[in-house]
Image (tube, rainbow, N blue to C red; front, top):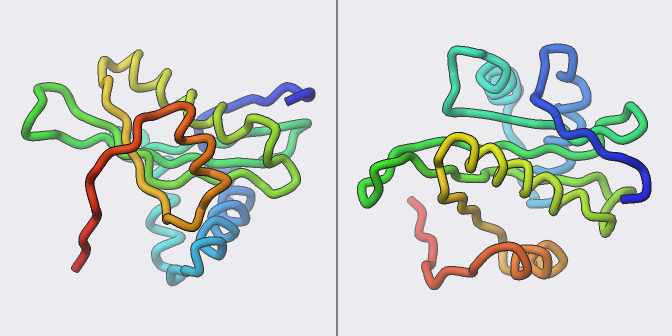
Length: 148
């Protein structure tokens, strides 16, 4: 990006910006959540006692333009925890400028600092623009997701 981007932890004062970005993310995936989920998720993400559920905002010129959510969890095949990168969103006005990469690399940095080398995520097959980035910065697996 030509303008510097700051990626920082989510704070209590960010609720309106976070809600705007997460709503847009959910809308992109043709989904929605009830108000109770918004409230509960935000409170979990800013609760310092809940270190397994995390979030960061990307800020450019004082405006929140992207978000990333990640979750630490144990893995039966590893000693260390792994990170599931659950949500990643960049405002359409800043897409194609490296913001998505910067947000993913932020999570990679967090993982490396915490000695949690594995970071994984999913996307929908139709998300071709994002997949072009993902193919450059991660390895696609052969797993197929099933859900109840």
